[in-house]
Length: 190
Image (tube, rainbow, N blue to C red; front, side, top):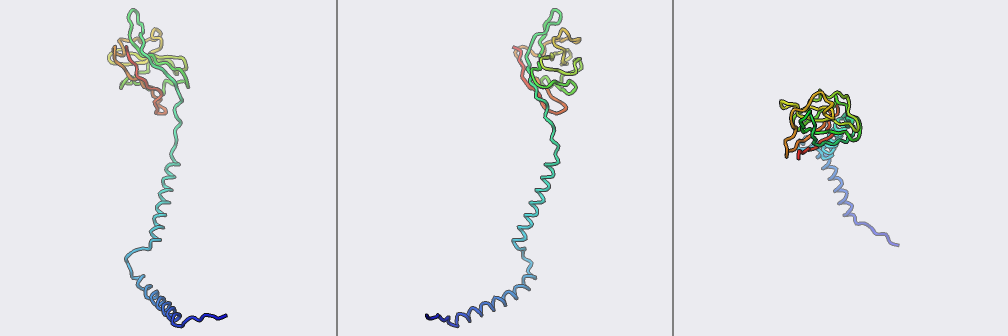
């Protein structure tokens, strides 16, 4: 079996290349220290990673420190236009009926008839439970109030129709303690 011999010219060439590479690396080191052109891409990637971690930490702390509010209790209501007899005269009122869900605490309610806030001071009840109704009525001087239902029980009486015939009115019930709309409906006087 014959062994191949490697010509010496090739090995000499490799030795010369390795020596010149060492020489070039030694020359580059002082140039690198004097070079003001840029930073290694690795340092840039590390800086971006650090910024990402800091931002994620900040956003995480903001989200986790947020206090979630409990939602308003679920409520089912209905609103319809009805005639209320006051002596010999009938006036149109909106009957707002509680038909399901948690009882409504009157002190936490705000009712809007269109854009007008409804006066709740005439209501003697502290809460409105399932099956109970209230009347939203025009009590004169462009004032709208919630009255006991049926209106004949109420100490305050309507002074005019709440909705003109052929027109409609949007009724909104808001839970002030949770700042949420509980019920919204458009009632029409046919």
